[in-house]
Length: 495
Ligand code: PHE
Ligand code: NA
Image 1 (tube, rainbow, N blue to C red):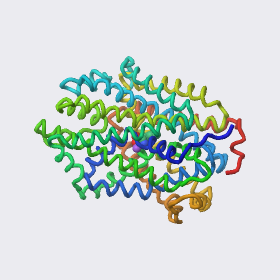
Image 2 (cartoon, rainbow, N blue to C red):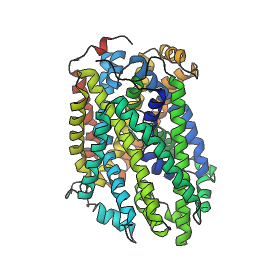
Image 3 (cartoon, rainbow, N blue to C red):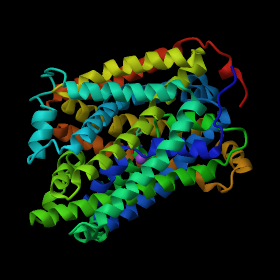
Image 4 (spheres, rainbow, N blue to C red):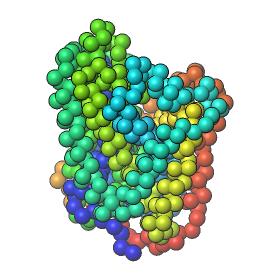
């Protein structure tokens, strides 16, 4: 069967932006910016974007487009012995990230409904942890499934299933063309609304006032680079798959630049609303700003709800806010499922419809563990290991395999033949040396921290059994899939 293609480059761009803009843009970015020197954080952030994010995004677009395949196929066409790396990327993303990412979207969906009646009452903290999640004492103590989360989860998997089921053009492209402009519109409403609140300017000041002294701390730079990889959905095989659906002639570098700038621009823009609201809350409660800012999850599910209870029309504001999170999350979820589906279609010639159904049922079942009372704890551990080790490792290997076992100048020529922005030879150097080096430094830093002190205060047993083994189980699965015989001739085709 002929390979599916995007109807237009605009559709591709919207789909790629849909993957990039996700939950991470809204709370992860704002929190990092606040914690790491306000406006000064822009320096490491933009440096990371220019020196690693964009070069790697171009690499993923280029390899998907030039080799015409999802990650496993693209790697198999570089050399059969590298196919496992593609599988590891897509397996980690689907059976790792997606299993808990879908649960967080489910929380957002539940909170969308709670917003209308400000269901969290006057203690959002107790509501979130004790009533909504009912967090248990240890990861081993699973407890029962939380039904509101399960319902949300079913809705999330069902909607993503429907979009991916309908295929590249009629599903993902169409959905992205509707969802992304909607998201931007909704976010703009939040931003302008938040600016009218008392105290908004105090919050904004904290957001933009640079504290350059923070830049001396290497942790700030490490966090900036990690955030860039996560936010651009790099190392997951997603952008490789999406680029493989582009027609022969497509502006690779132009689209990479646009994707990156829209994504990061969105983060900066949404940050305005986040900080304006925090400023409002600080002034309404008569507390200093530092006391109302909380870390990622708490920001969305504790600090924000609190502010909504204090704000005139806060229930509507809350509904729009959580709707934004749902939309941002769903379009990323779709990209995760597609990266895997696309890989299986490429290799085993499986029919998209039934395959998508199977993958989503499996995914729904797998994510149930994260909807139990220990869900938050599992989520925290798996997320830590996946984003700090899995993703980073795949990224390093990606640069090394493509950089050293494939001819980068060839790839660059391919890109330059069809693109608007010309890539110079410096790009080869970034991919071969600089990006892997930075990633290895991040890896070493995290490893050092994690062996000196168990992450998050969990027991070593829990960390090893849940975190490390999650990575290894996916690695084993990747090897199994890579060693199955090809059911198509795709890997023999040129290009
Ligand atoms: N880029 C998404 C975000 O910022 C996260 C994501 C990771 C999306 C992996 C897809 C795959 O939230
Ligand atoms: Na993002």
